[in-house]
Image 1 (cartoon, rainbow, N blue to C red):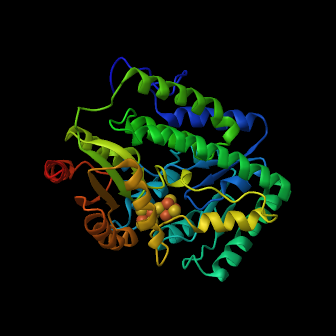
Image 2 (cartoon, rainbow, N blue to C red):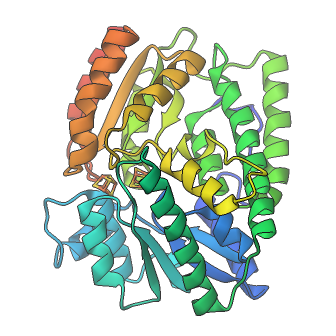
Length: 386
Ligand code: SF4
Ligand code: SF4
């Protein structure tokens, strides 16, 4: 980032990893007597968990360092995200898992589903059965029932309660948070962009599991600073640099190598189309429907994850992002052995190239550094073609 520009998140942890700030917030909540629920996936209904007075904590999943330990139990040819998650647990190195009183999982991909079976005895664990043909009426009915069952689990485990009015309030609060996040993303849509991918990434990480009330001061400050940058004529990245949208599997920690390579190759990342990026903030839950749990079910089933079939919504959402952020190229990051994102990449590539006329690159990678130079060569070639 430009050296003289004021950082967007300006507090005691400026310059440090946002994990520190999230951890501090959770520790504070715990001191106040709140329970913590560890979550792994975008399908965990944050609004319900918060409405029950419980703090959701995203569990660690992005380090290469825990994979060796995981491979003593799990197969080597498994998605690194699953191996890393499991490795963090068996080496007792994820501070969020350490704080968690319970874990909430969902039946998304086979690897995660089976990994959950290995950790289920360690802490109270609830697995939500996620329907995977999302547009059918039965799917919505089923997912509504699953959210109610999660509510029952949290009631039994923690004695926590939430009324429908309380859930409705939480929906409004999270919708407000999401709207503010989208306001931040609007600044990346400017040409030239005035926000760094790290800043957007840090904000998306901070906002995960946070209420709108908790995020409001951080986001208001960030928005003010962004408006100032725009008014001062600040631009991020080299003039005329190709704009890149990154889509695909969640990316964080050691997988951020891909973002760094794009930047080193002269690109500016303007859109992060993954659960670790913009995805959780792009849609809202309907308010005032009279059935807030069904409204949550409808909204969450619209998450365009590759575990869904068909997943046409992912292409529709990509079009929306491409039109807004106007990238010059799209890079699809697929984690090794993630079959659903890997197979879906074919349709994504066709969509990007044929419908939008943009160059497209699929990168299959893991959390190690072994393929950095190979990725660099391919990214440089892609950006030269822009
Ligand atoms: S990509 Fe799919 S499985 Fe992974 S976190 Fe997002 S919604 Fe969950
Ligand atoms: S990246 Fe793919 S294989 Fe890995 S946890 Fe997510 S959906 Fe499963």
